[in-house]
Each structure stands twice: as structure tokens, then as C-alpha cells.
Amino acid sequence: MPLEVLQRAAAEMTNWHDASGNPSGMGVMEMSHRGKAFGSIVQQAEVCLRRLLAVPEAFHILFMQGGGLGQNASVPMNLCGPDFGKPAVDFVITGSWSQKSFQEAAKYGAPHIAASAQESGFHHIPEPGSWQLSPGARYVHICSNETIHGVEFHTLPDLRALGSDAPLIVDFSSHVASRTVDWSRVGLAFAGAQKNLGPAGLTLVVVRDDLLGAALDICPNAFNFKNIADNASLFNTPPTYGIYMAGLVFDWLERLGGITAIEARNIEKSALLYQTIDSSGLYFNPVQPSCRSRMNVPFFLHEPALESAFLQGAEQAGLLQLRGHKSVGGLRASIYNAMPLEGVQALVAFMRSFERTRA
Ligand SMILES: *Cc1c(COP(=O)(O)O)cnc(C)c1O
Image (tube, rainbow, N blue to C red; front, side):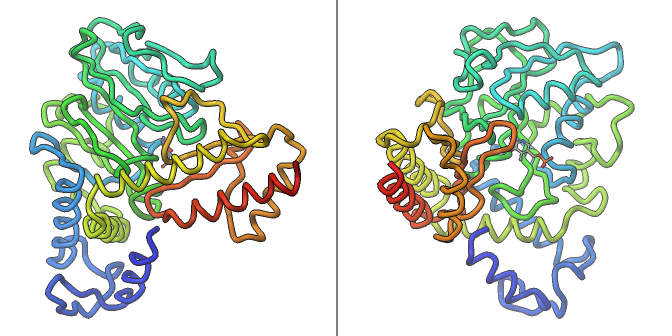
């Protein structure tokens, strides 16, 4: 979370003020989600996000719950109906998150692996021209930033150019709002808020209008995208505090100069870290340079026995949460939007000094 956002939330924790500075006499957690004050908070958040990410009018912005994994079920439940047997759904597997989405989809559709990077250990993205897309697939799913393996699509695939009419479904949980999005290539994108947008508990769905209304009968009403869209995210009680906090983050991003400004900062931060890794004799990153993530930078030590000394020294230097995901081991720096350049500079300085003293 950006420090400024936390400070602003703290300052109005017990008494929220509207844009003109009028006090409401209560905190956001105490408001009715149907009241005027919260109505203005949710509407502002939507308008601000639409402007930031340049979301076209043909798309609905939905604020939901259930997280990224909830969407692994919600997406097929919403797009695989009506219930006349299980339609084909295509997956491009580039790491653990797309793998999880693939597994969940089997309950609602007939998932098919159009391409997989497993043979490289999830260190590359299979060339879109080589994807085996199913004719008539209901959709094609990708994870545009694999958080654990550190693999990112720097351009979204153009399915029409590949001869497919299927909508592209994008799990952009871990790099949403870190870069611009080419919506002309997207049918639906979803994200758990907790990496780049705000606190855990809020889930963002951006869905093209023509994809609504194809839900399976078993789809719960509270997870039916059409219900949420028809009720402007107020079908049932949404995660109100999460929406408020995300709104403050959107406002912070706009004041910083919008998505192009944060994207430039993210390029600078990640380039500094990858250069440090690539030029060292101690650290390495196994991902193909053309698809390295700007948000999640996994790295390994040529001498794995030094890992615990690295983590201990880093912690003493105030550099926290650098242990790699347990499924891949090693180290990982997650340098989301809120991480300032100074944070990466401090990490790089520590990495260099650790290498000098240990090598
Ligand atoms: C973190 C993450 C999720 C999160 O799932 P939750 O259900 O919100 O915990 C999904 N997809 C990706 C790519 C992620 O990084």
C-alpha cells in the first residue's frame, strides 16, 4: 500500500469527508452500502479506474468478492451456459496460477491445454502462433503475470489474428494497474485487489457487455456477473472498505501521473533489479528476458547454501518478505506499484554488498 493512502485512511478512519471536505460523522466501515456517502465512494472508484485504465464504455467494471481463485470458478460458471453439456475452454499454461485456473474449470467446462510452458520449467511463454486453439472454444484463458514464476505477457495475444473469435480471459491479479491494457484484445479481465489495488477481500472484474447473460443455472446469484453489472456492484453488500481503499489508490495513481507514469517507474525499478542479477556472479534469474515480470522478480543463488544468510542479512537491513514461493524456492522480490524506486535501490545495494562479502 502507498504510505500516503494509509495515512489518509487513518486520518478519516472515524469520520469520512466528501470531496468538498464535508464530514459525514462516521467512518466508511460504519456506513450503509446503500447510503448516499458510500454511493459516491463506489461511483468515484469506478469512474477513476475507468479513466486510469482507459476502460472502454462497452465494458462493465464490477467490484466483487471471492478473490482470484473465486474467479477461477466464477468465470466458467458465467461463460459456459446454458447447460447443454460442457463447452471447450482453452488454457495457456505459463505457471502455477494458470495451472490452477485450468484445474478448476473442469467442473464447468471441458478445459483444453492450448499451450504449456511446463517443459521449460515455466521460464518462457509459448509463441502465440503455436497455440492449439479449439474451434468454437467458449474462451481462451491466460494469466498475464505469473506471480510465482515471474513470467509476464508484455503484449496481450491477438486472438483474431490467430483465427479465433473466442474472447480472451485475463487473470491480471498481480500486475493490474502497473501498465496499460489493450482492451481491444480482451473479453474479460479479473484481479484480486491485494497485490496492486488495495486490501485483500476485494476482487475486480472488467467484462465486455456481450459476455453477460451466458451463466450456468448453478451459478450463485451473488457471483452472476449480470446481476452485479445490473446493480452497479451493489447486488449484495460489496467489500465496502476495500472499495474505499482502492479508490484512494486510484486517486494516488492519478496524482502520480496515471498509468503511463507508473509504468515508466515500474520499468525503471525492474530494469535496475534484473541488471543487478544478470551482472552478478552470485545471483541468477532463469526466465527468458522477453517475458520477465516487472512486478515479481524471482532470483536464485548459485550457492543455495547462502540463502538463509542472505535472508537474515536482508532482514537486518529492513528488507522484508524476500523468500521465494515455497513451490519454487529461492528468493523473490515483489515490487508492486507501491514499492518506490528507493526500495529497489536499497535491495540492490544490499545484494551487491552481500555478494562482495560472500564471494
Ligand atoms: C495472488 C493471485 C491470485 C489470488 O488469488 P486469491 O484467491 O485472491 O488469493 C490469483 N491469480 C494470480 C495471478 C495471483 O497472483
